Image (cartoon, rainbow, N blue to C red; front, side, top):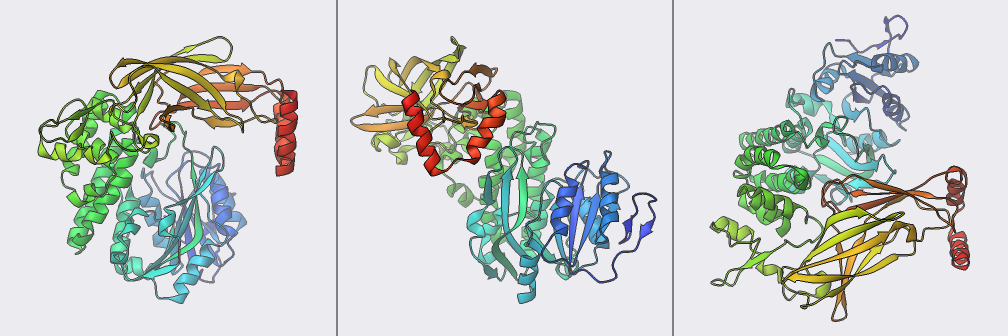
Length: 573
């Protein structure tokens, strides 16, 4: 293990570090990430508060990370390089080893694939200097690597500046379990012997739960203090640990760390937080798995139930009661091991999608999810949909379900879709229904009418040809993804619902000439790939004009030029 020195990339001999004690140590953990490490370190070095120390803690990388890290240390005396003697397989050991050599009274943690905003250290250190705090925390910006879209992680928790005397003042903060959004007082961590648990994944969750419970005073600031880069379509092998939900070991690790948190709450006298912590697990941790359940086979689902159900049985009933009905249905079906139904129900999460069927109980007058009245009192309670008023709610909020059962390639850039609509509450009148498929890759909608014919009460089916070459795109083209929707009208009211694709079919790709625009496009149709599994269509401009004229047109795009482009487009049509 190295002491607090930087090293020469040429000789490997120690070079002196500044004698002045830094105000803050920023630990950058890294493993086989030579490409992004310089960006992370640069974001720490360009902080508006310059008196910092940066410890690069390398979990024994096997790529060029060591060479890159040594070069960074050679160029700035504030950078210290630490290399673990062997790979630990997680984030805890690199952070803990860095803590042992950190010289500053305040500590922050940064992952090599993320960044710090320029004022992160300044803002959090100012909070510490205003009050005697155990830690200060701020907002986290999530940035999608596939398009740069920026959102705030848990924005409702960091919307305003406030100082809390313990987590009991706002247990909702348990949802914000990131260790990287906080600056800790070294004395606080040492006083409680608080370190990251080694040998397990999801170490942030246990560490943060302990920090919240042990802290007497902490401050929340609304300013952004962390940039978290998200790669939503990373391959399974390259995805981060938290995104490797397809691995059953991932499920086992997440449940294990929850049990450790539960034990800590009981031992530390914070049992009163258990319902809030259980609600956080159901609403956040389990919910992430739930969105993937439609794509899992029976064998995986059975193993998932074996791992998850014993823990679900220990959770507070009040935590379940705080969930939306659709999430409670999925949980109950899993606990009842109705695995096929789990997949069906999970496709409706977050989008108000109906079950394929509901079953009324003639004796009680209650209405239940699925094709039968549940056997147990617990299942009847959770699968009871009576209070949703399925048969009387306004038609635009009616629960319907539109599934594509067959997709075949048509001529040119067209596809033929067989669509099945489930109407479990029998809201649609008997007979053929006029339906319309809507798609909006630009300001002008592509509208395709077709007919849904009755198959039996509560079930309709129809075929529609979707010609993607007929979509009217902006003058400079369109690069992006859209999801078609299906619209129905009944008694003057319109209902709009998502279109569920088959969960697996090979992508269909076509080249679409664009006569009135600047460039042709490559159009790809595929299933969405995650919950709820909508039909997904992506346009990508191609050719020389796409590389030259398209970007220029987008740079020159203003409200006035867009109005002129629409006028010209109308004339050319």
